[in-house]
Amino acid sequence: MEFISTPKQYIDAVEDAAASVGKSVSFRGTVHRVRDMSDFAFVVVRVNRGLIQCMFSGEIDGMTKADIKDGMVVEVSGNVREEPRAEHGFEVVLTSVRILSRPAEQIPVPLGKKYLGMTLDAELPLRPITLRHPRKQAIFRIQAAIADGFAEYMISQGFTHIHTPKIVSAGAEGGANIFKLDYFGQQAYLAQSPQFYKQYTAGIFGRVFEIGNVYRAERHNTSRHLNEYIGLDFEMAYIDSMYDVMEMETGMLKYVIEYVQKHCKEELEMLGSKLPVIDKIPTVTFTEAKEIMLEKFGHKSKNRYDLNPDEEVMMCQWAEETYGSEFVFVTHFPSAKRPFYAMDDAENPKFALSFDLLFRGLEITTGGQRIHDYHEQVKKLEDRKMDVSLFESFLIMHKYGMPPHGGLGIGLERLTMQLLGQKNIREASMFPRDMTRLEP
Image (tube, rainbow, N blue to C red; front, side, top):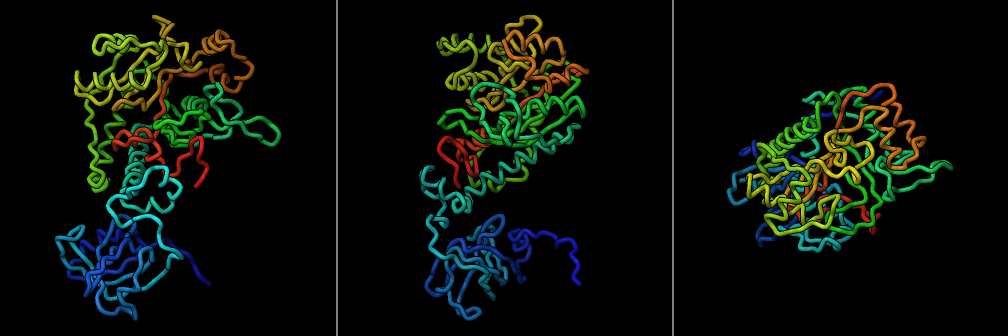
């Protein structure tokens, strides 16, 4: 009889080899590129996190350097020696090579080059291969660190990690931008947002967060929109105002940026990305933003309810020039175009206690304070000519007592794109889903 125990401790191959100069190491990886130098060859092996330069000379295990091809999966052993010209400052002189897997065909993309040199449209269909390129890996290691840092900060602030349904009976935001499903003969939808469930559970746990998929059936084909993306969401109860939510986001972003800087130093250097510094984030109201754009840029906005993309750029330019901040909060948006669950400002009900966070010319967050009073929520539904009976399961939390609460949602891909200075959100999505893509 065999028994299964716990796995061996994970060993980072690059770190292990770097610490083993003058000694022998063994590791597994994939041949990233082979550079024939006449008398010998440099075999660069791609491991879980990085590249290791190996030197192949003579005959090893019945093979010559000509037998080693890009894309082979290998197990190698060798002696580590210092080599300042090599990546990481060392190389492995091979003494053993075992082939674990051979590619059936030649790799169709230049993984061995510093840059792929492909257009996005040419690259995306080949993502299972192009993501093997170190620069592509770097993007998503950074993205993973953003999500990890977000979760770590939320937990440190007393938030409970929740997981909400993605098949729902009604959209959290209504409208036509919702995917319909046939759910065993019933009409169902893909969740536009975890909003209702965040509010339910904020009334249970006090503070909750989620990292999950969000679906929008918007017919946008722009560089900033996806039809499926990852949302970083949180909701917190017992707040005094929406400013409590904004403060929490400021603290979280500061933590996340420090977390990424700590855990992804090599990836940031590879991509040449400069992370922002957060101290305090300036705040302006929607009305003030329109006045600033008119006075500073001579721009008279025609959008009475929101900020257009060019206006988001203007406000970020103003914030950086005025306060040295790459972020700016815009608050008190017109209530008419904010969700039905957004609380209106008691001093001026035409405006909602709702905000956007803009970063480097793009809105990355929408949040605010929610209605917690049952009668106030019912009245707002009625004022908007919405069928109250369709929201019975949502209103149950208000009916039986709900603390003042608020929260927000951040698009992970948008945040990644802006942090890394990318031009298209599809660069920050492993396998993007837009109006034309269902594969790979």
